[in-house]
Length: 164
Image (cartoon, rainbow, N blue to C red; front, side, top):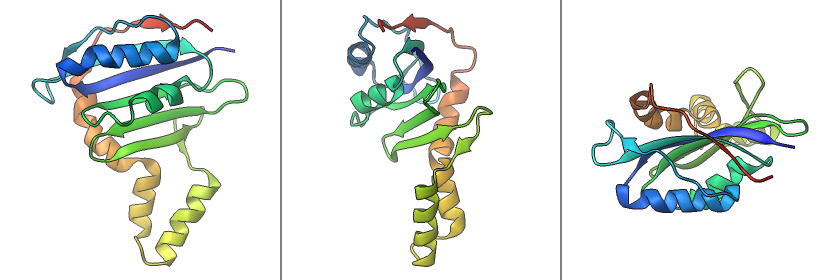
């Protein structure tokens, strides 16, 4: 079974770019060469986009390989496949990792255990319902990444097919 998705590097220092490629190649199992462009939202940094095909779980693998690299802003998406939900991972240096199950219509689907934990935090006075809903929907990550997303509008698209 083949999964498809997109890997967006929203900002990376130039010296880190080859290391990102090597890490992604390690997950995909094929050599990876990204087309890097200047990132206007963060002068001196680079951006890239890669459409990929691989086995289900590839988005999680890419995220795991890069999640502790504190100078990267990136997102990885994976479309749903039979038996697997769609997923989106968003990562920023200040916020860390956000993951969301994505429904067929593109909406964030909130699992039951996350809803229960959010309600428990509200009941315990740890946060407000609005704060919990924002966290569950990934609003802080979206707010931080949106300027970087807009700066990439019109960028060229490349597909990479992994060895499955």
